[in-house]
Image (cartoon, rainbow, N blue to C red; front, top):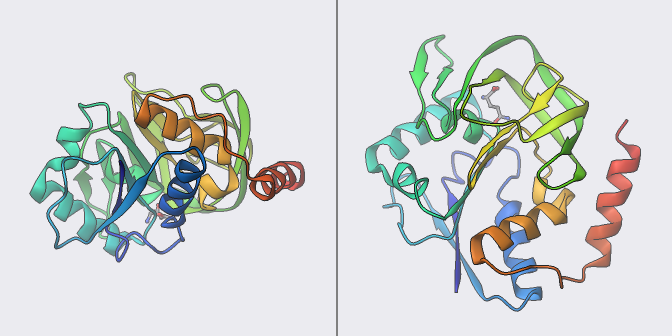
Amino acid sequence: MLTIVRIHNELLGTYGDRGNADVLAFRAKAAGVTSTILDISYRDPMPESGDIYLLGGAEDAAQALSLAALKRDGVLSRIAATDSVLLAICAGFQIIGTTFVNGENEVVEGLGLLDVSTVPGKSRCVGDVKIFSDLLGIELTGFENHGGVTTIGSSAKAFGKVIVGRGNGDGAHDGAVSGNVFGTYLHGPVLARNPEFADFLLARATGMKIANVTDPLADEYAVWRRSVTK
Ligand code: GLN
């Protein structure tokens, strides 16, 4: 049984990233893997037994509340040292970095699971994004909506090179990755836009080759999005 943990959707639900959990469960089932989605609110204890943990995007105030709850229970910091997979989108990506600047213009410490830091940019990054991911060897699309500009430190790698849009804010790179910890600015939800990424994460989490999922509509949608994002 694969356990997918959807974290703080009441705080990190602004951009619909909750759909990432549904895509993972749908494709896991199609690959013959049973799964369950655990919705963990900021008041709930965080399970340690999850296989895939998901954080979404949010406005600044909600982002601060989520970070406070995650620091209180400390579980995400422990799971990042295991084989569990963590996918963090936008505000979630900033939360798991070393520092970011909050809505009050203060520098706050993140969870430090990815060597990235975020400061306010000169203008908000809003619109369609296309990146090339070396890790997956394909283009991925999504949309972005963030004020933060993120710099990658020496112990993390970019998740992708930007083809269209701003990504981390510099227009060169998007996201970051270290082991099984993934951060990206791509909403969409990113796993609905890019089913290959969902299968990649499922493979990482299960240790199985996930290559037998048939979902022509999702494939067609991904291809179409890549062709029109320019
Ligand atoms: N509040 C953060 C920013 O604007 C993250 C936004 C988001 O998650 N879309 O940079």
